[in-house]
Image (cartoon, rainbow, N blue to C red; front, side):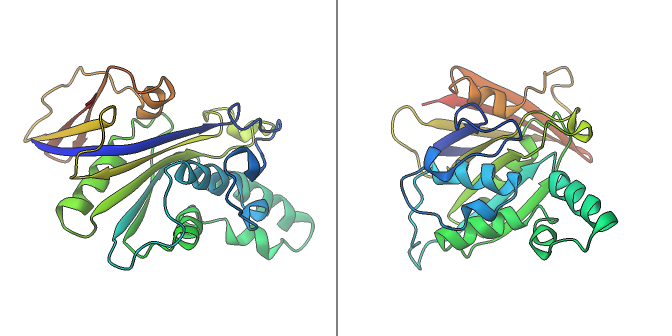
Length: 238
């Protein structure tokens, strides 16, 4: 069993930032540190970056530091894809829209703001994702010594005014700082156990974001099957 520590975590919801009916909100609802670029971002980037901001990352990362960025999203860039397609049918689409038709742009904006130069990965998951796949990839990056710490973000940026998004959860994001070093009392411990077969076939796959939204009280458990290997996850409060 491998043990990691979540030294900081955050959650952003449309309600917590007083977003408008389409999900948009102002940067000042998140942070007092300036961000002049925020207004041009798409919904996915706005929520992902805001969750990262609440982790208190320095704006000028030390050169000897190495942080990986992992993003897991079910909605991807669908909100911008829909706008881009609609504009393309009537007028030449805006180049500013085309920029955000890649979900990985959210990680690019995060890397620019905090000057992060470590590895990054964007995962497109199922709508009811547990977050387990992103946790696994974050832990793998640390174990492979590709980074000393991983920033794992789960984000959804959708326009609920559009019928395309009825099957997606409301816009929100959560972020975690994962490392091998123990955090202060009250932080979280992550344990990952690998087996040859699914050891817990009946274990409920509760979304990690729901657990964080409840204040990360008690414990969270989930499982993930990848090929012949199964992975069992458990998060508890230190």
